[in-house]
Each structure stands twice: as structure tokens, then as C-alpha cells.
Image (cartoon, rainbow, N blue to C red; front, side, top):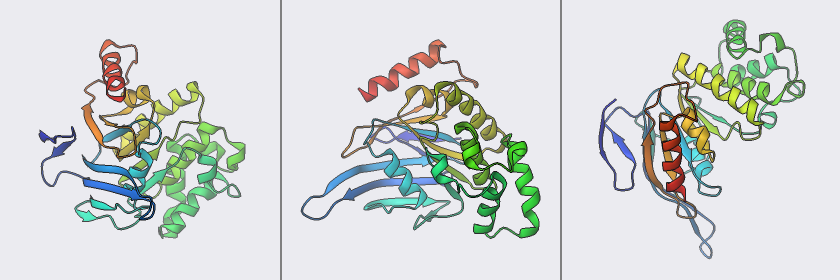
Length: 266
């Protein structure tokens, strides 16, 4: 993966044509003419195919807003967002969004199997393919034995795994994850980190992951994009994470990276 010179704001541009997602000088304004607020101020970033990128910043810095723009749920006020070289004008099946509250994202009146089936129906996947796909993704996330349970009968970690299974069923090219493990206890969160990395290393789907937890970013990311406080949030620096996986947070190099991100956020 070839990198060219850093932008002045610390972002990194990859060689032309290599980016799956390309963000160019994106600005986002909220409010009316009498009271307008600039939430994002000139965000530029490239995300390569198969890359795991974490957006880190304090609450209110626009991380979720940027993720919504990448998903096509919101439009940028200025600038350009491209997916595979084409402008992002709305939501697309190649880009799937994840939320912290899996219970709200899942359909509570459907079983685990039926939740996956619903995603296949919405995406117009051939009905003849449904059984094999459902078996594959539920097995992949270790929920095959729980296929007939409703979301309320599953633990928090299991509900997040079901949300992942439902996304993988439609074979997206990008997973956009908005603090998906933020509501889980520390032990379950660590298990979900290991689980997500195992899935990612097998299928190499591109992931853009929002978090305010520096340790989570150091554990997961290929690159960490550090955002400034809002309003007028920017990416202040992009840090490559050249550490082997699985990562030990007590490792001196990991601890040094943690302190570097912490200093940028101070």
C-alpha cells in the first residue's frame, strides 16, 4: 500500500485509484441562517480496501456525523465523498452501518435467523440462496445454536454478533461502526474485540470504526484518525499502527502510542 506526502492537517493521501472511500475537504453545517454551526471543518481522508480505520475524538467532535456522511445518511455541506470513485449520494448496500444499541437495530419480534433473513429480503438476494447464507453467517458468529432465539433472549455481546451476522449476509464492502461496543462491560468488550478482529482477518472487509476509547483504537486499528474537539472539528493527525495482532495494551510500543493519541486529544 503506497502512501504519498501528508496533508498539512495530518491526513494521508494514498496513490490515486487505491482508495475505496475518499473524503475531500468535507464540511458540515447545522442550523438556520440565524444560528449556523460548523460541525466538521475540512475533513480529508482516504480509506483503502481491507483497511481497519478508527476515528478517535471527544464526545461532540463530529465522529458520528462523519460516519453518517460516509454511509450516505447525511449529505456534506461542502466537499466531496466518493466510494469506488463515484460520489456518495445516499445509502448503499455496499456500506452497512452499525450502532451501539444492537437491540434497537435488530427487529425484536424476529428470531436471530429471521433477522438475517429479513436483511436478505430487503437486499433482494435470491430466495434460493437464503438457507446457505443464513447457516454460514450464523456459524461464523457462533450463533447457529441460538438461531431460534429472539434478541431479548440474547446477551449484549450475542446481539452485537447477530448484528454483524446480518451485515455479513449481504456481503458489504464497508462496515461503518459507531461505538458498537460502548454499552458492553469491559470483559465482553475485550471478547468482542477479539471476535471482530478474527472476522475481519478472515474476510478483510473494510472497517471504519468510531470510538472515544483510545485503548480500543490501539487494539483494533491499522490507522488511528485523531479528531479535534467540536465545533469546527478536523482530523488533526493520522497515526499508523504498526504493531502485530493480537495486541497487548501493556506492551511498551502500544503504551507509547496510547500516550501519543492522548497528548493529541489533550
